[in-house]
Image (cartoon, rainbow, N blue to C red; front, side, top):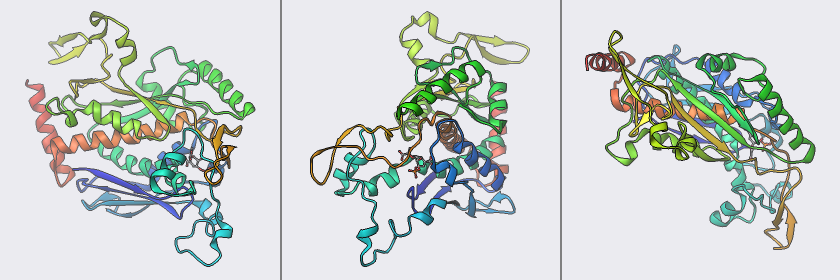
Length: 390
Ligand code: EPS
């Protein structure tokens, strides 16, 4: 079973992630992981922290001579900002440390601050926000890049784009080649495939900057080259759509997920929604009239592109803070503000890619197993042959 874990606080020494259960022989290169980390840092609307950090992956276990060796892969990403926090958040307490604490006692509406402080019995939300912060997603993206390397061996790719920022929405479908081109760009504005729409998205972010506000949006993750048959209809927790939904909603600030064209489908008749089935006699394969199901039927991948969207609420740290209550005095107070992002939709898309890649890698290994890449490939090729002869 492929599994991953992350640890690390936003202003601690580093973030770490382990990925356990990969077969031996998967090619892994630091530069590929670093490119994904770089992509996560981009986008118009990111905050001051991104100017401090240049996230770099240090692969410290599980990879030798650029290939996995079957043992857990461990990756560390150092926080440059840690240098400014060594006295405020030390591992070992020291006499007089209180004078250096950066206590957060005015919880931000929408953040984990208040619920976390009550639950963990802290009167300082600092200990909560340090882990709740989306800085944690750096570690997810690092192991997600390794999952992508495994998927690439089987012809699968996962990319994303932004389909809405605030009320501005991309009104057309993006094709796969546009997503590939977007992922190769070295100047990321808002991650939208349409320049004119992206310009209008930027105006919304500009407005949020001007007014001390924040803005959310919607990203779409597309998985290309996925074979028919990952996931299963047989039990609720084997359904791939459910597993992808959890992976997407677990991303900080994501409040909603959509598989395929769910919202549109809910407002339509069945005759307009289902993807009709056809057969290509020469190619000896089943084809579809459309892909409104987002590549998933009955919780099983159906061979079409997998489409999942994440809906992000606006970031909860506002420069023009909202009404709150001071945890110490119980008096009304404005919520805490240090610095924050104004919009993070393209970055969230990159995180969404990592999460989708991890879930697909898990489903792939569940179905095909293998301790070495060669063994996994043999099982995979045998299955594809079976599908061809179905
Ligand atoms: C983030 C780093 C954080 C925030 C953001 C994501 O850095 P800092 O808190 O030092 O400014 O910019 O986290 C949040 C949105 C949040 O609410 O905590 C990152 O690396 O993505």
